[in-house]
Amino acid sequence: MVYREPTKMTHVAPRPSARLALIAFALLQGCAAIAGLDSLEVKETTDAGSGGQAGQAGVGGTAGTAGSAGKAGTSGNAGTAGTAGSAGKAGTGGNAGTAGTAGTGGAAGSAGSAGSTGTGGAAGSAGTAGTAGSTGTGGVAGAAGTSGCPTGYQCAPPPSNAVGDGMIGWIGSAGSSSSCPSDATIAAYYEQNVLDKAEPATCACACSPPPSPTCVSTVTCFAATACAGSGVSAQQASTGNCQTQSPPGMNPVYTCQATPPSPYFNGTCSATANTSVVAPSSTLQACLTKLSNAVPCAGGGTCAPAAPSIGTGPCLAIPGALSVCPSPYTQQTVLWQSYNDMRSCSTLACGCSDAAGSCSCSDPDCGVRVNSSSSCNAQSTMVPTTNQCVNVVTPQFNWGVELIGYKPNVGCTPSGTAFPTGNVQGSGPITFCCMTTP
Image (cartoon, rainbow, N blue to C red; front, side):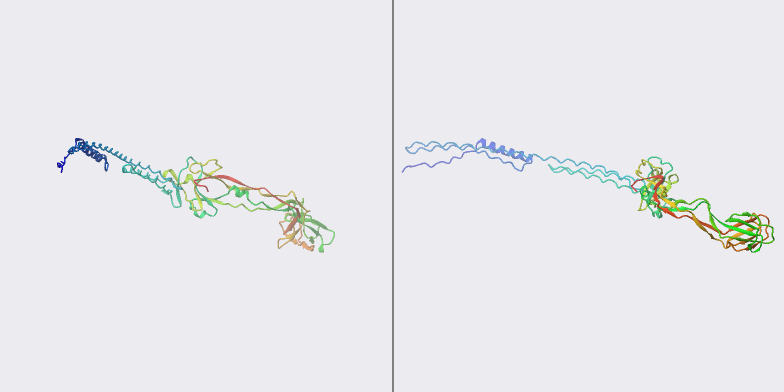
């Protein structure tokens, strides 16, 4: 048997390089904690393996060659530290709210208070920007003022320039006058487009009678009874005229008789036309008070009649046709205070026949009055116009005779066609300047 010595176990102490690696690893872990990293991966450096001991030489054998030393492990690289998030910026403050617009109608209300500045947003978490504050809300426009105005009136803003002898109030459709205060004036106004649509005249040919027609009766008187004998005196008696008539002779008894009256005239008829027109209607009414008499109100304004729901106001009413209205009454409408109606009929195509007619009794006592005075103011006798013989009073010289109670009816027959002419033109322009369109 061959005797072999037991193999001895040799303990190899860690090398200084391994201790240095442990120290470096601990330092890197500390730095990672300071930088806010959760961990740091570091590969431990492996010490180079010790070279194997050379085997002992067997009995009579050659000693084995010592094993080669193991290669040192590669050290792991340190992880990159994460970058810290940027702090969020503070939110920008909200802009101030816009002042409210003045309400329609009365004086502009006070402007709304400006909205509060928005609070700056809090700084966000790392990397997230803060939210900006909301913009403040603008104030609400003030309602039309009535401060200092009587019932039925509102405070209207002053015009940008003087308007002379103007008025202020409202304008509306016809029939809205019930909303006008009792101390204001209501008036009708005309639109030119309404006047332009006025219906033409209705025409028909006609004839005017001859100038100054009258009725006449022939009176015959006798110086005898029964309207006989040689003493005769005749005279034409006309309506409303006392005619002098000489006595037929000297006789204590006189008789007279008169013929039925007939019309008498000089000249002929003239062609005319029967004309009828429909008056244009007024479509607008206004309730106004003079600026010179108006009550002042807040902000230098004027108390104006308050417009109803069917009216437009406040408005200025200024005589004449203005080309530009003063601010804030910038909506312009020109109307007419009255109109000239020039509608008529043309008679160029009309004609008339010869004049003719009759006389009619329009009085209970119709006839010829024979008066003993030439001035027809003394004792008289009524002689009927029926050729009846009548005894008359004893006359003086130069009697007076007069036809009583008859009226002439004289005319002509028209012919042809009459044609309408002319139109309706506005008169007295007045400009309404309103804050809104009427």
